[in-house]
Image 1: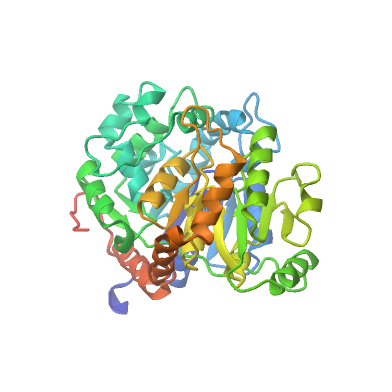
Image 2: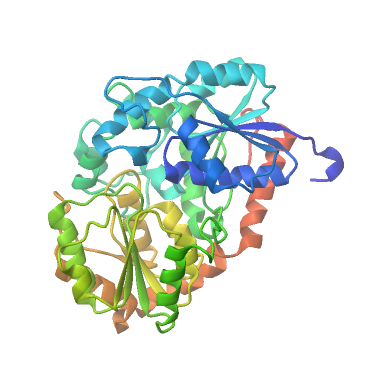
Length: 459
């Protein structure tokens, strides 16, 4: 688009209250700001405060706007993110999130907003935006493959998923073997609001928005992206992978990072396994012991990010010198960028997957068991960029032996070389910032032209 036809927009961003959603929304905000647009990033006070602390470099064109989270029964007053809660309390967070509708509507009506870019949870937002003459865009932080499994909005709203087993079979419209396991469906059900299911939320935002944008690219998901347009009967536009740069919140002067970096510097290139299960996955004591046993039996040097230093008694002593335990939040992009890292045992979150494949690292796929993580495990296994740890389909149990075997297959054994080669090749897509920025440029051009749902677009 020529600069003479470009106009400055006011764009509101409204993500769901989870780290894995807020992060890509912020990355997209940064790009839109660089295009000369004003961005209002709306979230709750605690999340806004966290963003301000973690991103002091944000330009004035990105304004962080606090919307106080209404009180609801059974929700702790300090909880404003899924990472603040156990999975069984997340439904109360969704109820509180829905009560933000009046505050958000007031903001949209009084702030001359051109577009609102929103998440799956705000099922009421497309209708409210339309009444105010504000364009609405549903930003899916899931990739296209996960969305195709959910199907068209009519199926989602109509209640196709009546029982857990309905999600454990592959729908007729998908040319793939990707589906969820029973233990994953049962776990995710625990975080759904009993009044408005996640399926209804997805269905209403897809049906009501002007168009859908997906954190993906044609080079990795050409067929699923094309299928989405057929299912939705509206444009589903890839905006690229929003591959993050190495984060600087933790600098070389931080003692904790300096200790890890010094330890990694003593290891051979491509020799250390990185293990991290995200900010919300909590394993039982028994399964934590099995995971630890597998990591230990693999024989590989490793960095293991754990919550609250919950590792089996005696484990650290047995792996002293070979393993590094990091408790709490870790500077993941910095760790993955270190030349000693050979691969990643991951919970299969899309953020973590993108960060790893942008470095060409193969994956040991250990589904966190909720949201899209199980689908991602099967999809990435099918794509041959990783190998899924075998687990019981009904209860998700596993043994240390299968963890050790999976790690060694992906990282060192001859039979894992095709996986390692495919993952290395993915760096040319996931790590290609020029390619990914082209998708963002195309999306920004659509906003600047004032696209409406009456227009058609060829993907």
